[in-house]
Structure formats: C-alpha cells, structure tokens
Image (tube, rainbow, N blue to C red; front, side, top):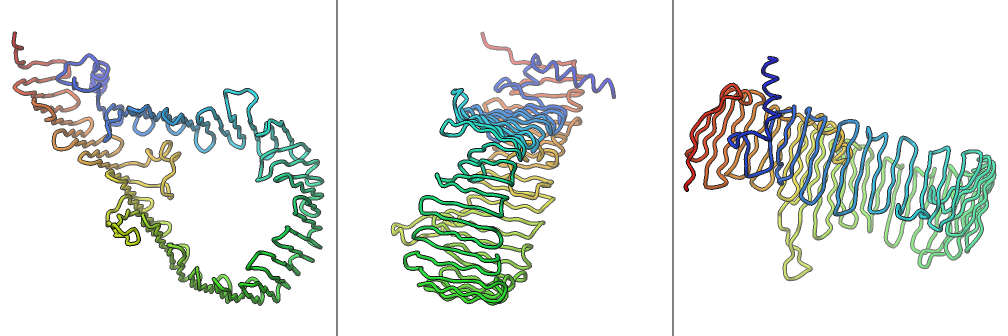
Length: 491
C-alpha cells in the first residue's frame, strides 16, 4: 500500500497543474482526499479547506468572514464587516477578542480589557481574580489592589469603587456616589447619602431606610424582621417572627405567614397567593395564574407565557406568544429538547392576528445521539450530539466536529452529506450538479450547469478514471497515463 499512498500524494501535489479533465476550470481549485485533506464549496458557495478529519479547518466567505481552527488547540473567527475577531486557546482555558477598537481576553483567571486601543490613556483593566486588580476607570482614574492586603478596585461586582485594607478588617464601597463602610465584613456596615441609610451589626441589629420607599429592620436576624413601605397605592407595614408567624398589610395586599416561608396566604387587588407548604403546593390567581404540586406537576400562565412540568425538572414545556412570533419549547431532560418558532401574519385589522402556520425555526436534539436544526430555508442534521446545550459557538468552533460522525445539510435545492469527516460524501447543487465519493475507493461527478455536460468517475483516486465532456472522452490509468479525444477548435 505504500505505492498507493505515494500516488495519492503525487496526485495531490500536482493538482494545480492538472489537466482540466481532472480539475474544473469554471471555479477555483477544488479537490477531495476524504478526511485527509479537501477543499470544496459548501451549500452557500463558501470555500472550506479541511485536513486530518476534524483537526484542521479554514473556511472563508465572500464578505470576509473566516474561521481558522487547529482543534482542539486554537480557533479564530473573523467578521471584518462588524470589525469583530475572536481567538480561543484550548477553550475554555483562554480567549482574546476584538470589537472595533476594544480588545479583551482571558487566560485561566486572568482577565484584561483595553477599551480603546487607539488611545494610550483610555480605560483599561487587568484582573487576576481574586488576587490582583489593576486598571483605569471610565473617568480616567487609576486603581490597583492586592487581595486581601489592600488597595482600590473600580467597576467591580456592581460597585463603582471598592477600597479595602486587610480584608475583611476594613472595606469601603461606593455606588452612585453613596459610600458604604464595613468593618469585619459582613458584621459591621454603615451607608449614608442621597436619602439612603443602612446600618447593621450582624446578626444583632440592622436597619435599611430609603426615602419615600421603605424602612426595614432586623433584630437577631432572622428571628425578627419588620418593614414599612411608602409606595403610592401599596403602602403599609409587616413583620416576621421567625420561625412562627408573619403578617403584611398593604393598601392593595394582605398576607399571613405560619412557619415562614413554608405557609403563606396573600390576598390582593391584582394577585392572590397560597403556599401550603412551600415549595410543594403553590397556587396563584390574578395577573399570574399558577398551580404547583411540586415536584410532580405544575402549570403557570402570565403575559403570553404558558408553562407546565411533570416530575420537575425532567419534563417541562413552555409556550411564548409575542404576537408576531409564537415559540414552543419542550424538555425531557437530559435526553430530549425541542424549540420551535412560528411567525404570524396579520389581517387588515391589526387586532385580528391570523396564524400563518409557517415554522421559521426548529431545533430538535436527542442527546447524545442526534440534533436537527431548521432556520428559514436551511436545515442541518448531526450525529452524534454530545454537547447537552442547544448551541454554544465556542463548542461549535472547537469541539463539535470531533463527534460529528454523520452530518447532513440542505439549503434551498442544494444538500451536503458527510460520514466520518469525508470518508463518504454526497453533494448536490439542484438538479444540475452532484458529487459522490467513498474515499479512497470511488468518486463520481455529474455537472450539467452549462451547455456541455460533464460526467467523471475514478477508482482509487485515479488508478482508473474516465471523463466525458460533450463529445470529448478522456481516460486515465495508473494515475499518470492519460489518453483520449478532444474536439478540434474552429479556425
């Protein structure tokens, strides 16, 4: 078999200079050596170069989008029109991405972002979580911190600023120019400013007051908590004596609690609630309608969303009606997942929606065996489907090709089928062109896209071959011996 391997390599290296009988002059060079190496156009006419099965891929599009992958070590996706680029290194261990003038990335627990690479004085951050933090915030102020020794961190954990020294001995945070001082966090804390006052010595006593909204307190948390609310139309007060009893009286709501949070009854203008006991029995009426016999059965309806479950979380279904679109999801965890989206058209009266009955998107997965996707006019089938979630771009770029043993894709009147990364290929482009290959034994091409019909086949990638183009007939033997007839060109 060594002579056969050398013959394949010789044929591959000579492809750019090959006679047109073996290479299509009407398109850029395409070739197919099964899972070893291939360069072909996909359903959308985009060129794909692949080698060593799923390990290497280079795919390009006419608008400049490109994917380069050396799996599982590296991948890079580029979208010049959106000025976007993302590179991944043994994902999820590391990545870097660019969007216009912003550059960010991560390696393990080290994160960095340069928000404007064209401006040396722009906002940036470098965080080695949870040990070291450094950067410049949106106001141009620099910061640095070594945890837990001390320093300052800006724009972190939902806070504008965080200052600490020998954490948890002392910490100061700031949000919307309202400071909070903490000592031996979370035991002692004090906040004051802009109508906000918070103080606690946890768990002995605490108070949280916000002007014109509420005043909350606790004593020996969670034994005693109380609150006063000042919201227009929903003012009142309540308390909880844990774990025995609780009471809430508002303008639009009354609640009673026994052994909170397990038993609760609420009556209100917009909502009624019964928990007896939570979470096993839950009943709501009003704007939200809900009945749960958890974890056996449950149903819930609110604002165009209807869901129910059996044996939670194993079997769940959800239907979402947005008016112009209707979405249905079904879960039978972990084995089956379905997600369909349907568009609606409207009659002249906008208040009379008429279902169009056309499915615009459909996703089905039987994990870990197969997945099926339909988006507009395109469908894709894959076997196997080891990733349990619906769609994760990083998984698709770096790992999914390894378990894509059988794939089938269709777009309009074109289709592609592959088995074992190209050991078997079947391609069709409408009724005019088709290609079938069982590597390395046999391949066959039919092309009727122009006036001249082309028929081509070969065994063992050129050990024996034949092509007919119009009235021309050409033959090939032992890879290098070729003969046949050509039409003489007119003078």
